[in-house]
Length: 142
Image (cartoon, rainbow, N blue to C red; front, top):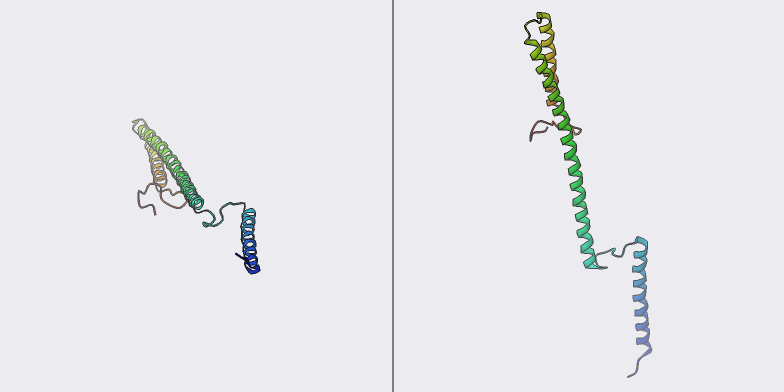
């Protein structure tokens, strides 16, 4: 069988074209420093990369949610500590007011202190977090 010059030329140009395509793909890999740039480069690896990146995004969101929950709990705990301290002061004031030897003027002063403590406790109970949501409002935080 005789091979024509034209078929040899076509086969050679086809080989050069394939090599240029391969070189172009290698240049893209070198410039991006990634082996898989498009899903057609390696479909199995592309699917694995997608799965890993989605898993990483989920983990990042879990970490952000955990930090937000910890922050909210710390703020709530601080507020509850303040309310506890106010209640202790109010109890002490009430016990002092029960002493029969205290004058009416002192009782009026204690009443003012008690009312101020009550107002402070209401202010703490109505406190908002950094995003402006009420801490102790249950599901209706706005």
